Amino acid sequence: MNRFSLALSRGIARVTDSPLGPYQTAVIRIGFSLTWLLFLLREFPHRQELYGPDGPWSWQLAEQLVATNDAFTVLLWSDSQVWFEAVYALAVLWSLLLLLGWRTRTMSVLFMVGVLTLQNRSVFMGDGGDNVLHLMAIYLVFTRCGQVWSLDARRARRAARARARGDRPRDRVGPALWGVLGFALLLATLAGRTEGDRFIPVLLWAVWSAQALWWLAGRRAGSGQPRILLDVVANIVHNGALLVIMAEACLIYATAGWYKVQGSRWQDGTAVYYPLHLEYFSPWPALADLMSASGTMVMLVTYVTVAVQVAFPFTLFNRRVKNVLLSFMILEHAVIAVVLGLPFFSLAMIAADAVFLPTSFLRRLGGLTARVRGGPRPRRGGTSLPGPRPPADSPAGRAPDPVPGGVPAPRT
Image (cartoon, rainbow, N blue to C red; front, side, top):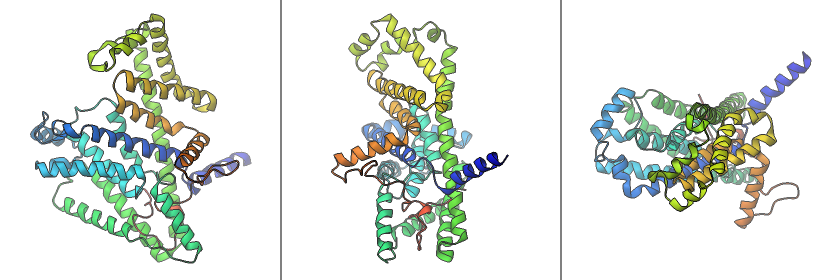
């Protein structure tokens, strides 16, 4: 009983003391923001047909659909062409800033707004990866995804050095940014623009209010008990969101695998052959013919795909087997991106898979990237990247003078 109590107390301490998976959440942030950014840039010449007010899925049809499913999209606040162009441009900007890790607390919220706004405007546009991106954009809001590999982390290190010199760094951008966004959210609420979907407006107000609460706790109590309590809440919510992301990825593969098992083409080993010869999914017909030339190879790929997807959730308890299957799935998505011409679906799935990548591998990858960029060389037995120090987007920093936008709010 004592051992159980000790293990339980250690587990609770691990969940509450610090946000887990800093490198994994950073890769998820980078992966999904990059996927959405590349999609928006590639489809920029076709943005009118996809999401514009004069597209095939007209503004009136979208308005009727949203009235029935209560989806959130700011594009239906106005049918003006100027409004559409502004929202599309802001979605690109928010994706870029989240990719760079600038004010990740704020950008994760705005990134979610941009994703939901465009996807809910035209629900029939997508290739499957959009569903994953849709969900992950919401989950990212609850994570502290700027601890490493971000401009926020660099700003936090500079602030720590300044405090070590006796200075008190102040952040004026954070309060101004959250003040402007709070004012815009207030105007939208008073104008009745948020009356459809209830979850997203409530989430936006909750995040904004939590950020204000964190700022007030820091101003009034410094590093006292209120600040520590909010830090614990933020850690718990982050770790819970990370667990949900992992469960979501497992659920995707498990359901895909079990549905495949029930299909006759997957049972007889010929399922992979057919998409390779669909004109819509054959950007490289010669490559597709080469891959399907061997019936034995097609059968092996079909059966291995099903086996890996069904077995993957159960391999999480064995690190080596999990890493082998994870490598296979990432390779498979890379092949799908090239052979079937589905790059954004593959990027979204690879970004979701990244939550299971080993921390040691990600640290080595970060050290290699730093050397390529000409950064400091890794220390002996370690890496040039420091451990997940509390950045400006993390309440764990416990700066003496916290400000909104510079530290994350506890998730409520």
